[in-house]
Length: 153
Length: 144
Image 1 (cartoon, rainbow over the protein chains, first blue to last red):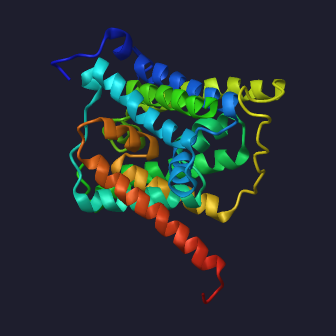
Image 2 (cartoon, each protein chain N blue to C red):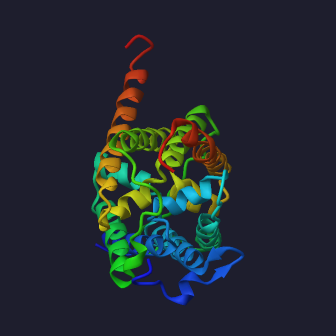
Image 3 (cartoon, chains in turn red, purple):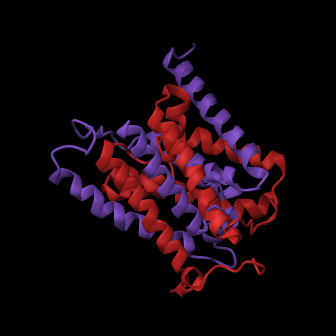
């Protein structure tokens, strides 16, 4: 973090929000718009991920490869983006969290990108409810349960 | 071909934006979800920026006859707000608040040197697979 500081345009804060967060968010939104206007698909990462595993589809695999490749490119340009600012978690917690995220996003038909970015943008009431459900549970878990359970924080 | 390239372009833009946003660091995500101490609002900025763009973009679609590379826009099913939606959202939120990973940052994390990511992703695949099995089991009958 200190060795390779991020450029000022990224770290400059607007009401406590780094400009990098806003710019990154705009790019994510642009990606969702490109995918919908070009081929009429919703850029929901859990949906595309499980869709690729279950049904295949070259566009799905290339989307997923692009997510990894795009992140890789950004980290090559600005190595300090690759940080872990919380204590490392044990394998047990990672497995519990992964199982919940996999089960939950499939049962609820979407995650932060599908229901959050695309669903809210489409003004879909179903997605607004989903966002409230996962944001609510996420805040309660991170603020309370995580501390009660003694997950390293 | 143009379908595949659209997928690649959108995915790359998505991954690049996600990394720039700082959300590939699960600590930053937990900084937003954890209201018990030093709250960090960055995730709100990411979601806000993304939704503003998608609000504009999705309003453009009805003015277009069809997507650039497809004969028609899909009829997105208008499903009801039901129990699976809410239960699924809550379960996802529990996992998200525990480790700070949702599917996109976990996937993008494969580009990093973070050893947590493959373990989390393997468990996520298992969770999705188990859910599929459970759903088929349930559909097969009450005692199936």
